Length: 288
Length: 345
Image (cartoon, rainbow over all chains, first blue to last red; front, side, top):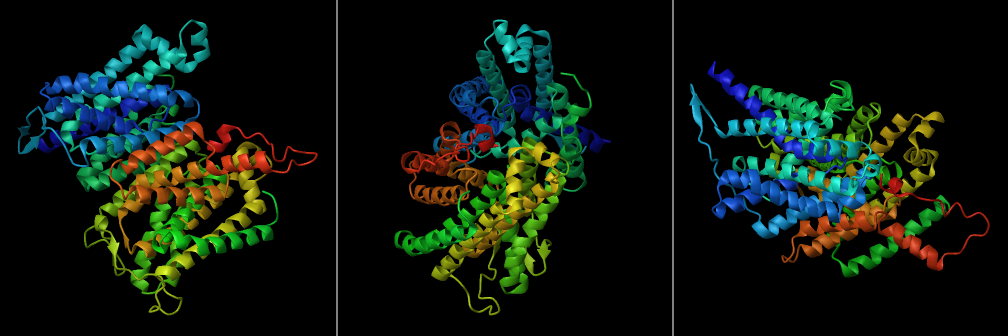
């Protein structure tokens, strides 16, 4: 009984962290068709922003939920203006340029923070269920992931800004004819995507020891979650994160964490082979 | 491609001979050997990406697979000839399976990138976790993150005691690179190569003309992997210890950068890009003011933005404009429009 509760929490946590890791990329790739391979480094910088802010004496929740997204969002803004802007519509070139950016940021972080592990302790204490100890912070991550999905859904579906953004991504010429500047809307969307990456990196920072190359651990997972999700932004994110999270945890508990990771990757390859358009390319068509 | 194959052969022999004579005067043969190995690795991706239009994010997987195959086989056999052959065949077979899975599923660009990336990650994670004594192939322990040390290095076929190392190993590598370069040239001149370029240009048209695009892409992918595997085996002989970092994403990224910087759609570009950038990295590694990765990243971004065709086509174009003979009559052969999308994708 206790064990099944623990496994359930772990599964929810795995799904939630996948949603967090992928949400920024889902906005940038799912909406803008920009494959941002520097996504992991955006998360890494969110983590460093949090740790720096906490070390300066700022409340950890303020640092995670406000400062880190802002800092990374602004970095994303600079990246969009300097690099990405010139490459819209050139899928492979954006991939390569953002890969270059990812190496650039790794180098930058190494020069500023050094090639050592830094970290902060989790702000929420753990508690026991029967004979098992559960990390209380896992619940925080689950809550943040749920809030994030709901907020994205509401903003995209029920606000004018969301409508304009969606319209521009579908037909930028039409949006321009109606008096909206696609250039600025792309800029704003990229800012939001980067801020989401920063938020994810910040929220996950207390769980991992941060090194400049931490981003590499996220990028592949984010990439496959978003691509396996397919064209629908939120339904895709939710379904593929759910699928991969459960596969990962089942094999982790059954065999070992390494096999869990490998099973996730193999599941991704098989899924892409069977559904090359992603999960929402076949199911939940037309949903957001 | 102008001139005939025998013309190419003469050029390759002359240039190789010249470089083998001149380069050791400037750079130590130990460093040169690794530049040659990287050049071969660059050529392998340059072939499938530049001429086949297959952007593989996991070329490092085949490189690593070749190196590990060599090391494991060499420990078991105690001689280097069979392991060298295996190091070419195993990655090629693996790539043929992987390629068949992808191309018969008609997966393209992004999905191809993801799958090759993921496969590289799987290998990396798997090899990294094999430190325990239960992971053994024959007499060879996989060693996990500790790597595989102490395997038999290259020897003269048939006599395991006669090691090839130092300067003579450099000559072996240089000649092998020239041979591979010649074989790639021959392949590209054959109908197989020309059809591969046709598939890169327009896949639908080629399949409507009756060519089996899937089988041809799979075959080309396997050839690229075979070359990468050979480079891996040569690397293993040079380094004398193998670690899982061979499979890392950073390694894959570097190969792609070499091709972009050197120039896609050329044979020389990726080789020069690889050797040049690897040497630059070697020089940068001797200073500590600026981080190495930062510069690599900056180079990639700047090249994608400002010189997406790469150095070799740019220089060749400049050369043609300034010194080239203007062909009389039909000029479309040389002035064929090359749009950016094709060069980069």
